[in-house]
Amino acid sequence: MRLVNISFVKEGSVLARHIRNSNGKVLLGEGIVLNRQYLTKLRYLGFDMLFVQDERFLDVEINPIISDKTKEIVYDTIQNVTTSLEKDNLNPKAIDGGSVRNAIVNIIEDLLYSSDILSNLTDIMGYDEYTYHHSVNTTVLALLLGMGKGYNHSRLLELGMGVLMHDIGKTKVPKEILNIKGSLKKEEFEEIKKHSSYGYEFIKNNQDFSLHSAHVALQHHEKWNGGGYPRGLIGDDIHEFGRIAAVADVYEALTSKRPYRDALEPYQAYEYVVAQSGFQFDPEIVKVFTQNVAVYPTGSGVELSNGLRGNVIKQNKSLPNRPIVRAVFNGNEPLQGFIDFDLAKHLSLMITKVENR
Ligand SMILES: [Fe+2]
Image 1 (cartoon, rainbow, N blue to C red):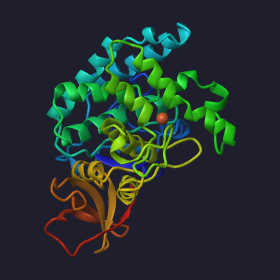
Image 2 (cartoon, rainbow, N blue to C red):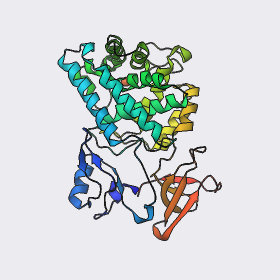
Image 3 (spheres, protein in one colour):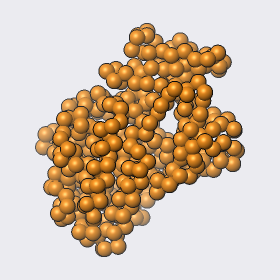
Image 4 (spheres, rainbow, N blue to C red):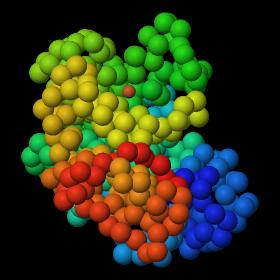
C-alpha cells in the first residue's frame, strides 16, 4: 500500500486500509473502489490522506501501531468517562478508573508487539475525531517515551492512565469557550488554562488513580524553562510524567489537522520538538523522543535530491532521519518498476521534499 494525498488519488483506486469514524466503526472498508462520490465525501469529512493499493508496494507493510480492537476499547473508554462525568455533575468518582486501566493495559500490550520505532502515529483521520485521536495518540507516544526511559509495567500504567485523562478537566470549562476557533481573549484563555487544575482535582479525588497520574493533568502545560502554566515550574520541579506528556501532547497536536489550520508534516513537528529542547521541553525527554520517533514515517511521499520520487517503505532504527525509500517516479515520469534507496547507505542522497502524491 501507499499513502497518497486525496487530491492525487485517481478514481478507481482501491482503498488499502479501513477508514473509521470517531467511534472506531468502519466508514469505508479496505478493498473498496474509490469512485468520485466517495472521494468527494471523504474530502468533505476532512480526510486528506488515504492508503491505496499499489502493486509496486505489495511487499510494504504499514501496520497501525495499535490494533483496531484496542482503538475501539480506548474510544469507548474516553466516551464513557466523559459522559458519566457530565451526567453525574462532574463528580470525580463517576470516572471508572478500572476501564481506563484496562484501556492502557491493552495499549501497552500492543506496543510491546509492534516495531521498535514509532512510524505511523498519525493515523488517517477526519475533523470530528480530533478529541479521541488526540487522547489516544498522545497516550501512545507518551507510553513509548516511558518505555524509552526504561519504565516498568506499573509505572507505564500510572503514566498512561494520567495521559489518557490529561485533558479531562476540559469537561469543567464552559463549552462556548472551548469551541472558540481562532484567537482567544485574555480572560477566555485564562479560563481554558484552568483545565489543568480541574483535571488534577478530578483524578486526585478518584481512588482508582495514583497521585502521579493526577500530576500529568496538572503539569502537562508546564515548560522546562518555566514559561508554562499553571505554576510556571522550572526543570526537574516538573514531574517527569508532566515533562513526557508535554512533548507527546505538543507533537501530536502539531501533526493533527484542525478545521482552522493544516497539520504540520511529521518532520516539521519533529524539528519543532528538537528545537524546543531545553526551552519548552526537557532535553533528556527530547533525546528519548529522537531515538523513538521516525522523522519520515513509513508511507510518507518524498522527493530525493537525485530527482526521483517515491515513498518511505522502512525505517533505520539507528538513523531516524535516513529511512529506506522506494522511488517510482523520475520527476513526473513513472519509472519502469521501482528502485529502493537505503539512505543509511546512500549518504549523499537527501530528502528534499515531502509530498504524498
Ligand atoms: Fe491540555
